[in-house]
Image (cartoon, rainbow, N blue to C red):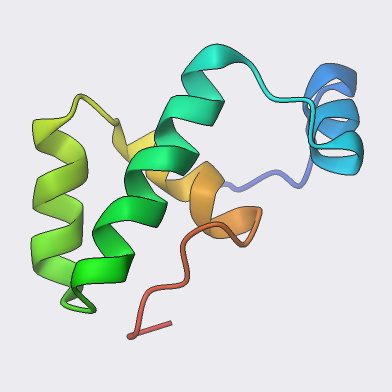
Length: 72
């Protein structure tokens, strides 16, 4: 799998200034809520998927430090 460190300018701006889209803010709010109640990575990922948070959004949460899995 080829990975890229490239992020577009809108993502860079959002990360620098905490100026997130509604979708990004919703994902941050959901992961913050669930990590307050559990540290079980399997449960957290299932909870995120149940709330329509995709794997790419979970990866974004990890990359930006909003979600730090125990196994990482």
